[in-house]
Image (tube, rainbow, N blue to C red; front, side, top):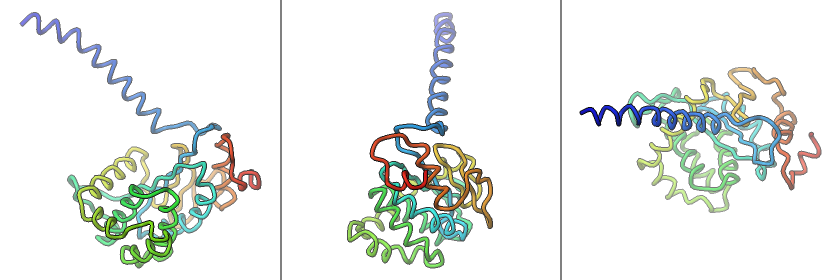
Length: 228
């Protein structure tokens, strides 16, 4: 009994130290600095797929992301609720949840450029989500996106896992409004009926300038020399 108590006394400080290191490392990962870096710039959109504000963000900003795709890592995360594991509730109904899963599966399965092009197409007609998914996949990817595979993902537990992970990211970053844009882990701009919290602007030129100014690596896109 005494040996067990001594062992606990010895292990508790070690567990505490390891836990502190883990939390600190996680903080560093999820709150990267906005200073200039040679690394790719992390761009995150937090949206609801059938939300008019998401459509505004995506139709305004996705063309810039395509132009700068060589220097960014783009991630789309969703705003919804999960009453219990895999029990998702989306503000615009079940069709939005399906649309979210379509986009998450394609984001997970294909390249960033393929995904952005698909998202551009689907977000132009948010009223048609998720029924425009197959058409957008065909029109934008040159048959790279295999819709049967996407559907298999959407209907599987994989989509639930992606959705759950997406919501965890949304909660972690405290994103509550669709659309919220983060650059390198920091709030850059929001659109909720109108633009707000956009200290660096909210048009295409401002967006490109914000991304390019945070990147100091080689082979900058030509847009970085034009707008910065």
